[in-house]
Length: 161
Image (cartoon, rainbow, N blue to C red; front, side, top):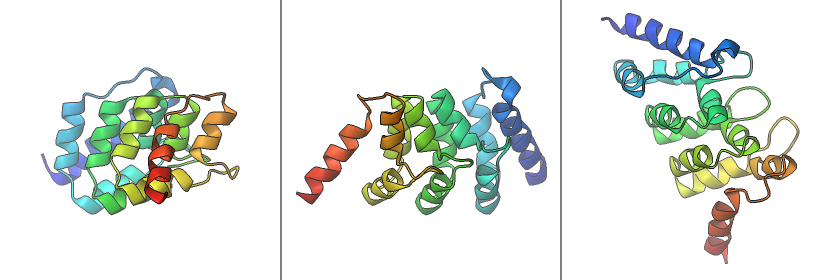
């Protein structure tokens, strides 16, 4: 299979995953990882930034479904610097962290934040959505008062004290 065939297959897989009709769509993680491994880094970056449904990248979709296996596979497919940029520009009004927070998907929040360095975690947690809210503020507005963010913010506060 050529690199072009791998790209086509990956894009088809992610488009189906992000479609409205695939509410319960799943991706075989092994297949996803094999396709990601076969694609050049710049192409992966472009594919992960693409909105397959208006406002929905594959990362944002995985965060909304609390699909930590897909989320992990997509995050480790790119280098640390690109990972943060993809998360900061995650499609639509919310980035993947905001989306996971609104849906109260604790494991998705942890997967996203644990994939980053400490300084990147702080930068992503400080990022504002289309309404000017951080992910923690979105979680609180959605009634998620026991947000997993408290653990990360407490850790951040202890580093600055």
